Length: 270
Image (cartoon, rainbow, N blue to C red; front, side):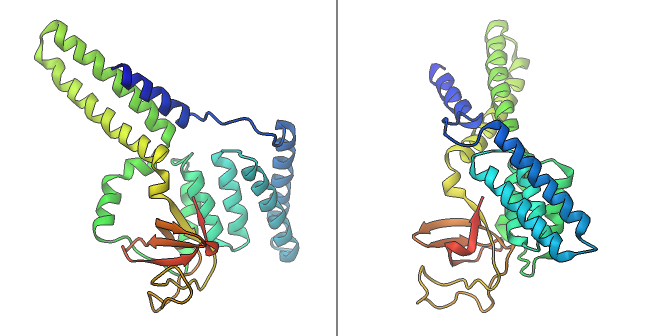
């Protein structure tokens, strides 16, 4: 059990954010940049009907300032959501979906985020439906994607504690009805533990990504010398899973299970 506690403490440090200190922006500078980004975005919305050129410039400015905060290490669902909105206004569907997906990892149940992500996906030119085994897995593991890692970690710790309490009661009281609640708590503990460990320590093995530009040729290997894998190129907004990374190239799996290689510069990773 001691080893369990040590493992939980290690997971806690990783999940709850033991970030090393760095010489970045001060909190005051971050707030100023955030205020300026919001002001630019609101100005862009106000100018949309009267002056689209000015509106686009303001949305570009807002996106640039939001990106500055992300680059400084700010982890915030609303920040990623706002950045996605700025790119959506600019018609950059790939980047919009990329940042909506990043926001989804922090605030997965936010209704505005869900609506905007669904809308952005509806605008993509290459719509690839999830089929077969991946569709089944998506349905079975929906809870994994619809809850934040912090929420799953809290449930994990709660189920772990409850499991040992119920097991102790079962041993002390010698009453069989404590056994089944303990089994249920144990199943939840294991499921949440696997989910949290997968996201925290195995993220590189299940990295997700989004195509950011149009006319991306999927090739049979990691070089321009390989033939195209498909007749039609991919367009911005296509989501995928990373199978392997090599210098300048990504081996990807599409929602329908098809695979191939694309240039790393044409995609963004979540």
